[in-house]
Image (cartoon, rainbow, N blue to C red):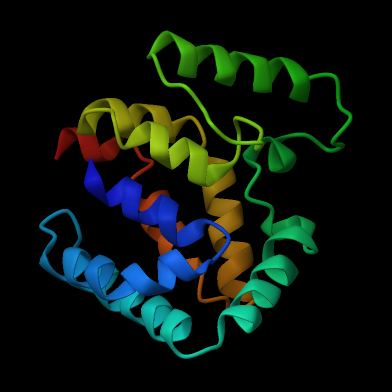
Length: 174
């Protein structure tokens, strides 16, 4: 599903390529039938933020938001276990990496498999029901992360709230 690919791109460390492609990404989401009106409005605020600052400032803000603030970490298992060295985090990361391999996904990144943009890349290759079921396993963590970003008034709260809203099994009944 293409929306997850877009959300993955928007949650990655900003670079010139993202800024160069922002008009195309915005047009894609504006036309998307996968997004409702409120989601499109929320993403427009992120687009305005991304297009309204110099790249160096965007990068600095991103690092402050996601790398220096543990409550905003995009590594989902960080929110699941009390301590990064917790014995349960390692097996969870291994299981997630094995799942990627089972689906034939080869990760070309230095990131751990629980990195949300990487997970969204994976989910983009699943059908809608599979994506919902997969994300529902992380619903609580996605909710915590989305709430933390919203409390901080972060422009990145928008893509997180969209992912969170899709991580519920009640969507399957609709």
